[in-house]
Length: 411
Image (tube, rainbow, N blue to C red):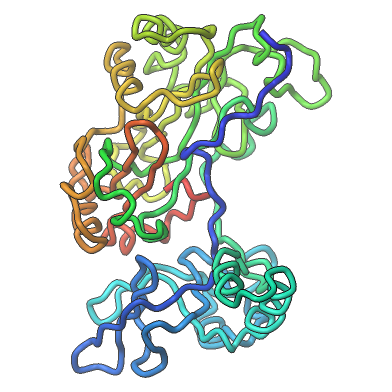
C-alpha cells in the first residue's frame, strides 16, 4: 500500500458551500387574496413580497435563510433598522428566518438586481471580458456565483453544540469527508433530472452530525490522525469521535464518547470489514468511519422529545477509508442491522416520481411524526449508488425550531 495519504473522494456527503446570496429568476407570482402581498417562486423557494414590486422572469438578488444582514449596509434598512435582532461577530444586524406571513411560508428575501451595482454592473463587466460575445453565458456565469462576501452577508451560526472547551486533537482527520447535502429547493430541476431515480429515504433526525472512526495502528491512515498540539509524533488511540470542527479526546464527561461507548459503536466498527468482505469487498484493511446523528435532550431545542439526560447515536452512512468511498446505502443499512447499530429510520425505498411529483408535494410529505412521536425535522434522500443526496426540511418544523438551530449545513 502506498505511504501517501489520499484526499477523500468527492462525494455527495461532502458539504457544498451554500450560496447565501445568489442571482435567481422569479418563475411565478401567486397573489394572496385580499392583501397587498403575493408569493414569489424563486427556484424551489417561496418568498412573500409586496404586490407589483417584481415580475415573472425577473432576475433578482436572493438571500437565503440563515443569512446575517449587516446593519452597515443601508440597502437592508427595512430589516436591519427596526428589526435588527442580533449582534453577531461584532456587528448588529438581521438574521433571515423562515416566517409565516398571512398563512404562507416565506423563506428568504429578494431584492431588485439594480439595487446592487457591484453585481449588476461591475461583476457583469468583469465577466464580459472573460466571456466575449455571449451575453447568455455572462448571465449564466453570474448566476453561478455567491455574492455574500461582496455584500458582507455572513452565515449566522449561533453557539453550536460541539462540546466546547472539551480537550481535542484539533480539526477532524482528513481521511474521510464531512457530511452534508443541499436542500431540495436548491437542487435545480430536481424533478426533471431525478424523477425516475430510486432513492433510499430516511428520517432527517434533529441532532448534531458526528463521525466515529477506527483505523489500524500500522496503516497509513493512523499516521494521518491529528495529534495534540506540540506532540505530532506521539502515539494516540486509533479510535476517534469527531464533530464537524473538532476531533475529541476521550474523557469521562464527553457526551459524545459516553454515548457511543454505551451503544458499543467503538467495538463494532472493527467488525465492519468482515461484513464487507463477506459481501464481496475485494481489497482493503479494516479502517472505517460511521457517520450519524447525535441526538438528545441537551441538543438545541430537543425537538425530538428525549427525556432528561437521554442521548443516542443513529448512523446514516459508512465510509470505507481504505478504498476512499462510501458504502452503498443498502450495504450500510445491512451492516448496521447485522452489528445491531441503530440506523436513521427508513421511510421508503422508491423512485422519486413515485413519492412526489413536485416541490409542494415533497415538502408536504416531509411533514410527519418522527421516531419518538414528535414532529420530525424532515426527510433525507440518497440514491442507491451514493452519487446524489438531498434533504427536505418540514416547514412546520422550521417555523417552530429553526431559531434554535442554524448548523453548518448538515441539515
